Amino acid sequence: MEVSMSFSHDMDDEYEKLIRRMNPPRVVIDNKACKNATVIRVDSANEYGILLEVVQVLTDLNLIVTKAYISSDGGWFMDVFNVTDQDGNKVTDEEVLEYIQKSLGPEACFASSMRSVGVKQSTDHTAIELTGSDRPGLLSEVSAVLTNLKCNVVSAEVWTHNTRAASVMHVTDEETGLAVTDPQRLARIKELLCNVLKGSNKTRGARTVVSHAVTHTERRLHQMMFADRDYERVDDGLLDDNQRPNVNVVNWQDKDYSVVTIRSKDRPKLLFDTVCTLTDMQYVVFHASIDAEGPEAYQEYYIRHIDGSPVKSDAERQRVIQCLEAAIERRVSEGLKLELCTTDRVGLLSDVTRIFRENSLTVTRAEVATKAGKAVNTFYVRDASGYPVDSKTIEAIRQVIGQTILKVKGSPEDSKPGSEESPTRSLFGGLFKSRSFVNFKLIRSYS
Image (tube, rainbow, N blue to C red):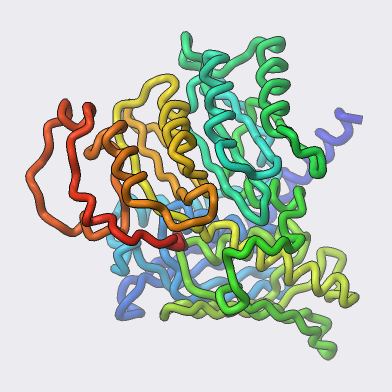
């Protein structure tokens, strides 16, 4: 069976390569057509999933899509994206422009990359996927287990939504700095992490997957939380109805389309989150219009299921609405944003999250990265009891970790000039101006 499936995939690849050679993609990047944005036009043969791949390339470059027009009816795919960099300027970096051309042009192979999600193997790290019930201190417990098992976390992303938590972690062996390959050790890692995820809550399942697969982390997190049914509404008390995205689905009977409209607060990666979810739910986008030039984003999609039918029932319509709401809300992090930058070492994540836990802070979202021996981590934290984060708690944590190492973003301190502290003084708890952190409320990140 495996041989026949592999043969079928090879035949599909050859056919798609032939189609691509006959109809090579055309990418035009124009910095003159629009006053405030770079215009990117992509024309190619239409393939299922190609829209997500194009949006994923733009998202991975941290480009902001301010407008988009999408049409893929019939055998041809035509998209126009107005994009800016994170500062709202046109994209002028030649390396970025060249990367877009190579990634979206004739050299790219969208269909193969779609099938390779979760299939490519890596010898550099071991991938660990975790899904379970969220609770205070969960990230601390997970990272402590990995440290005890002589594993170093080189990158990780953690999302929480509707009382559920999901994470994709990349770890290496402490001694070799490479992927963990011993089967018994991998089984032990999986067993202990699964026990941590289960905790005392047996009402919803915990899931742990250990592999050497290379995946697109954010897309995988969407898939994991979707599979975990985080879209089933739980009243967490954090978002009221006015703050939730407004999603509507109606059928256009004359054209056999379902029309999806979404109004929400604009934020980076919003388009990716929406298109990713529609694709993973096996809907095909035939036409779309995106307008996100102001604080509010408006998205309109004309879709059909992969079987060619529009939304067939009210139950299906409600499920589409719930899943799109969840996709948008997952990246909206309630909490105080903390950024940590220091020399990487084994056990760093465990130590930092333990300090958070000991000070009654829970992590609602986290991004952990290692670049050239430096740990660059972002945490969104809130008080485990649901109260506003206490400035004294932040003061105590920064005194332990170091003021120049751990910084609070979005606070008055960020914009105030000041003399640079000695790293030694920071490590041993130099004082900081607590008045800068008075009356902290929960802030909402849309990044």
